[in-house]
Length: 396
Image 1 (tube, one colour):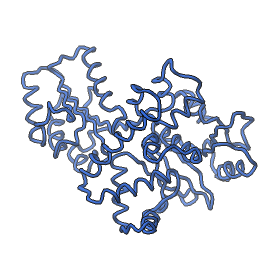
Image 2 (image 1 turned 180 degrees about the horizontal axis):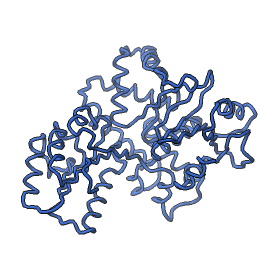
Image 3 (image 1 turned 180 degrees about the vertical axis):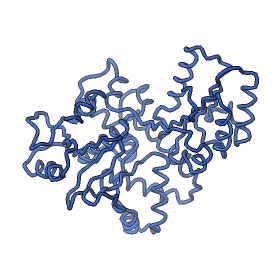
Image 4 (image 1 turned 45 degrees about the vertical axis):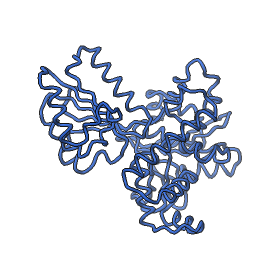
């Protein structure tokens, strides 16, 4: 704040962007900013229904701040609901002493037009649902033990709104189904004028059902054909893009470590909140390995890492996490119960010829020494790391 950069909070619906904006508003008032120097526009409120275009937005803001003296702050919730909003923001951002903070439920918020108009004068803050440590904080005195709470977290996901409700399948899944329908209808169907809604739902069910597994548009099209649903590969690619745009899914590309290049086939797709998957498909304990992988992926993204899937020869490394000059290789397993499992998880890391930290996460109750230079760690310890813990772990 106080610097000439447009701040943009992006994230899936219901992850807490609006709450963060309200907290920022309250903090500004506590620090002495006058009410008249703050313009808060909530596009999901009918109070601001007349602000529909860039011209409406520009006129409203100019009129609101007409008699104000000193620094001004513009806060807009769900800005993508205003047509050509980036034109107005580009104009307002050039007026000097105005802090601008926006939220949106769309990954395309940072469009090429916005980048052109602001020419590097914006910064994005990705907002995710609660991590496990935050989930425990929200649970407060209701916490039983961390293992029980983790199973609850794995089942219901990390949307903050759930903590206002009774933690039962009947209540939580009904709420999550409602959120899923809103994302599907408002952020995808309505935005992209999709007519084949059943086809869209079949594709997202396939993605949800194959979380953490390599998939391609060809594979999805072939699966739908076997169900007597004919769809072109280009349509599947478009729909997968819409899911990512609405931030209900995230794509992790495969990276060839030996060739040092991103591969263009068989990406993995992770879900923005696992609770949505279970509300749609039901909770299946047999999927535990892939669910844990999804949890770790989101945690890495939450900590600011860029994440890819590693490929070393014929072997795969679950995650290569990059953050500035940092790199960590991570394998995720449910249990290291057999020598074959240990071999499968540790071998790719041992064969990777560099000195970056290598880590195997699992839910094993007992841990011995690190295995041949690769660090072993309980998955819950990893999720509950503080920033300083994380830095020390990376240093090792």
